[in-house]
Image (tube, rainbow, N blue to C red):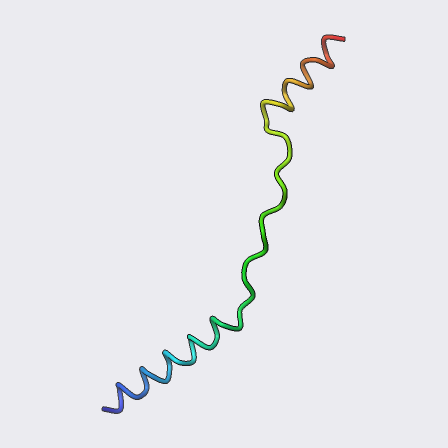
Length: 47
């Protein structure tokens, strides 16, 4: 019986801790792809 009570209390503590954590930050805006960058470099080198 004691084990069940301790397990339940630990469950509540972990559940409360998870609520207080901040949600992950949104991903940074994506820049140009590698192919686009390489194409720009190629075009600049052609000049």
